[in-house]
Length: 184
Image (cartoon, rainbow, N blue to C red; front, side):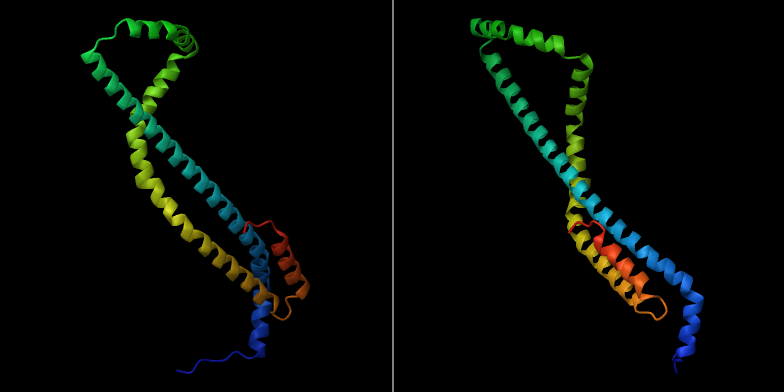
């Protein structure tokens, strides 16, 4: 099967018909570059937020485990040796601190803390099951974004070389693309 080869008239005819589309495409390249930059910044911020959630969850798990161990240890001691004179002395020393804590802690804060502790197992499971797998894929997104940016720049350069498009409009588009703030 023989493929027709376009001649110079065919190229000129296509340029006359598609001039508006090419101009629109040239105008879209800087916007596409800006969107890519915004997406990269968003990925960095999302990664940082997810990492912070993971750190907070781990720290909360450590506190819960320590509190449970402390409570178990203390309950075991009290079952063998009920609190006596020493415990009363400690409680008397702690009384001003406990009164201040009771006066400054709102019941809603206590309820919120209880709800948080109740939700820790589910929160941990969701972070491990949903958030961490997303974090592992974020490393593969950045190279794809850079490849897309490279292709957009090459397309811009190719469009600038089309006769009749005007080197000044293509040069100004490239200049805008180079001067737009990007994260590397």
